[in-house]
Image (cartoon, rainbow, N blue to C red):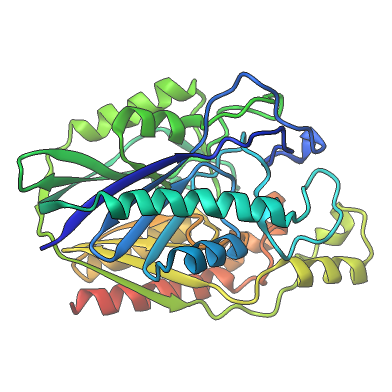
Length: 376
């Protein structure tokens, strides 16, 4: 019998902290009067799914949550809102002083990890409702646009609902690829952006898809969230059996290296650029897979482009699986591009920290998870 639980904890800080997402804010602290931010947890069997309203989930935060909660099958995702406190404060590698980016503060790592763990504990304490089945809806929605020269948005949206033996039902999660940047750098208040609005509406979790080159179609966040909800609600649901499995596979990362244009763009010497990237970039990362019947959620620890997300999804289709790709899962290795896209340069390429083959290595790791899942 598969049981379901739910938890939610307010993670709005008790004092003003520097906002993340836009270096143009120059480290400005958030102003009062915004929206509360939350950590939302759902537990299914021995798996914990967590959506946190912040920019990224640094590896040190994931490690702290695992250590404090004891959860090994953890699928923790940042919504990537650009109107939350800078999550680099929770990154124990971020001991550098870089204008516009917050440095590590252990106090806040402990504060945030405690609250995320509390959301998981709430979910575990309420994990009493037997699941009868899941429903899945997938459809292409025209609400995202590419911001890279080689980009073509992969507009597939996915919604998974859970049905209970007592006759009730809830939205479990929704995946859609569009950067939560409907608020620009001039916004100084805390905002959940479109994922926060959608979660308030649906009651479920939001995982942003392969967002590495995708911006939202301009709209106010509430209308954007409503459009995605309505688009998915019109699609016929397909039942899935209440069976789940959890898996991981390492990504074979190359040695961290700055993009060829990183030093000149940022006014750095080559030696300093190499030193910064070597310290900041993680040396290890993994794909995380959550399988429900013939649906597989592929979690990526970074921001893959639409091209890579599409490649992963289409490979899954060939293996008989419905696949959705989620960004910002259990870590952040930066933007992830194909070799050709990396060579084009630009903002995303300069935040791709493991060389031009990272995209190929990501897709290879994802295919291994998919191949293993297709045999289950």
